[in-house]
Length: 114
Length: 117
Image (cartoon, rainbow over all chains, first blue to last red; front, side, top):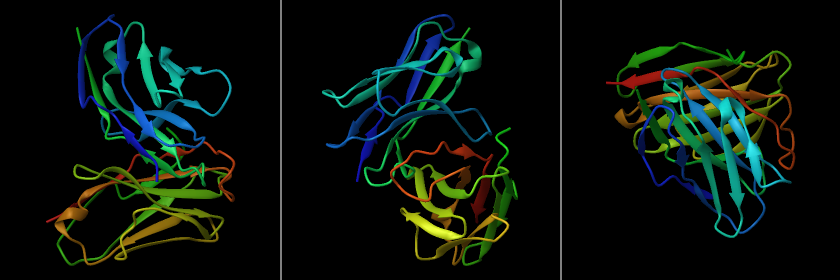
């Protein structure tokens, strides 16, 4: 089965600073990759996904991620964060035999400070 | 609002008891997915149903079972509850999902928080 590693459990950052949330996955075959955001007391919302094509994927709220097959990474970036970006972010990879079955990372809590 | 509804929002019960969590998918969605989010295990896929039939299984305990009814709502039944079952249980839905080799975007509900005392 696939697995996902999010190395940083918490990332503090000041407002308007850039941020990168790291995600590494283990899979030797083609899979799909996702980033979800969870705001306090809410469900998960899809930020962006990589299915195929360009390795630079743009998502909602100004986020983007780059798929790097050689490094098996899918890091999430935003050039300038807002207070409203404070949330928990989850990286996920699809199962190689079922693209609707996901394996999630442990999550990274982004804390944007004024 | 994703359009996926889950009831109840909160549930407090005792060890050994049985509970049922309910999920109503978005209008038109045929697939329902169940996830467990706990401090110990993180976010884990439990099971998927498509139009009433089980389609994929994850780390779902034998004490847990699910079903999807003809009106497409789904229920997750948790029995012989243990302290470690305390978690946030999410339901998601998607339009498709009958086969595994095409991607279908999942929309998540707000979750049911289960506390086992």
